Length: 141
Length: 79
Image 1 (tube, rainbow over the protein chains, first blue to last red):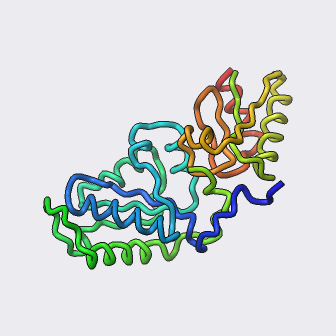
Image 2 (cartoon, each protein chain N blue to C red):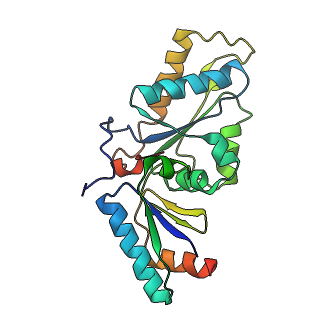
C-alpha cells in the first residue's frame, strides 16, 4: 500500500491549485495560457473554475479544502475572485493581469514576453503559500 | 444511503474508509461503503485530489482524512 496517494514528482509547489478566469479577452486568455504552461512545467495544477461556478460539489469542495491555491483574473471585474467568494473559499494568492500594466483588449495574438510576465507574477504571488501541501492532494483531479 | 470513498488504494484512502465505517457504527446504520479506485471514475467527481468522501452524490471532503465527528454529521444530515 502506498504511503501517499500518488507520487506526483512535482516541485515543492507542484500541488498549487491554479484557477484562471479564462475570459473572452486578451487578458482572460493570457490567464488561461499562463495556467496551462505553469501546469505543464510542474509549478501547479490547473483546475476547472467553470465547475466551481456551476456549484458542482466535487469542484466546490476541492477549492474549499485545498491548502494552496492561486486565482488569476484578467481584469478587475474579478470573475474568478467572485466565484471563490460565492463558495466562501479563502483567496490565498491572487493576480489581476491589468494590475500588471497589461492593457485589456480583443487581440488574441498572445505575446511570449507577456505570457512570461504573467507566469512570473503568479509565481511571485504564490511564494508564501504552504509548500508542504500533501502530495496526496493531487491524485486524480 | 450511498457512500463512496474515492482513492486509488493508498494508506490515507483506507484510513478514510475506516473513519467512515466507524461513523456509521456510531450512528447505528448498516450501509456498505463503496471504495472507488479507478482514476477515471474518481475524476468524474471533479475532485482535485484524494481521498474524497461522497454521500448521496455530494462530495463532502477532498484531499484529507475527515474527522469521525464530521462524517457522523454528514450521515445524520443525509439520513
